[in-house]
Amino acid sequence: MKKLKQTILLISITILFFACKKNDSVITGNTVPELILTDVAYASISTQQKMDVYLPADRSTATTYAVVMIHGGSWSGGDKSDFNTNIPELRQLLGNYAVFNLNYRLANGSSILLQQQTDDINTALDFITSKASDYKINTSKLAFMGASAGAHLALLKSYKFNTDARIKAIVDLFGPTDMAWMYNSHPIPSITQPIIVNVIGGTPTTNATNYTNGSPINFVTAASPPTIIFHGTSDLVVPISESSKLQAKLLLNGVANQYVTYAGEQHGWTGANLTDTYNKAVVFIKNYVK
Image (cartoon, rainbow, N blue to C red; front, side, top):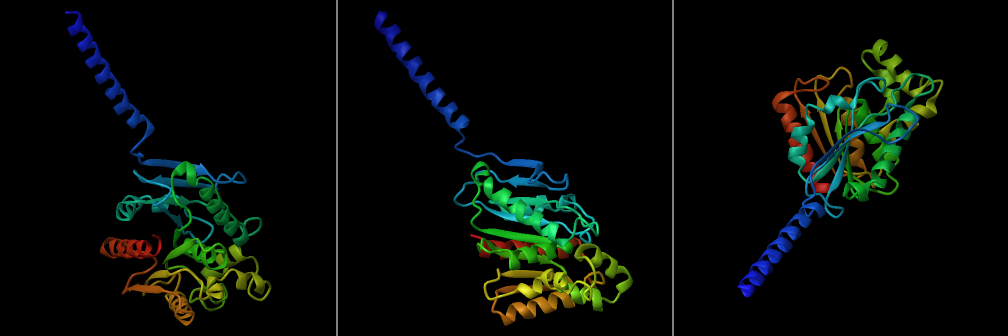
């Protein structure tokens, strides 16, 4: 009888040990859960300096790279929430990539101009890099995606400020590329000129340096990251010539690129063409950020 009790006790201890080991594996996290963080402050100067963070399950500092998204809105409007409807679809296509959806200080024609906005993009990327270990992601390779004014900021960041060559791919959704042309030659100058002055400061005549420094097309070199461009042929806000000129400059410098146009589409689109845009964009990202 005593021997039987000892045997039962030993079995109980063994079961308890393995049960604890099983629970330990859950607690220590052999499987890293998905994590979504909203309105994460990446700086403290303004309440606009926030981002939404989407971290996939089973991520790791070895294999999980990041996609940074920048909204449009004529540099003086818009919000990261403009992407909210499409982020679930985009994340599903991306799979094991983290997504960072940025806000930035909006231009006001005086204290907040393009320089402050590019500062915000640089600061946001520094913040993401500083959180690589906490977020369990790899920030040695990145993709940037922007729409309209956000595409302009993404292009400027990637061509002008990519000094460590970590940005490996750009998704350009109908972004302005030549700010002097946008001011001087846009077909609707009465609308566009005040918008451009509001973010650049002055005109091409009074402040030529800012227009030169604020134009992504001026910073394309053979070392520029591969770029995929999307544009509607009937875009009146940012004429398609802005993207055509950019592709010509990329080809001239031997930069890998893809140029996708949608006949009859204007400044943005929905439905099948938007699905096609995201499918092609994700294939492009996965080809160069891996």
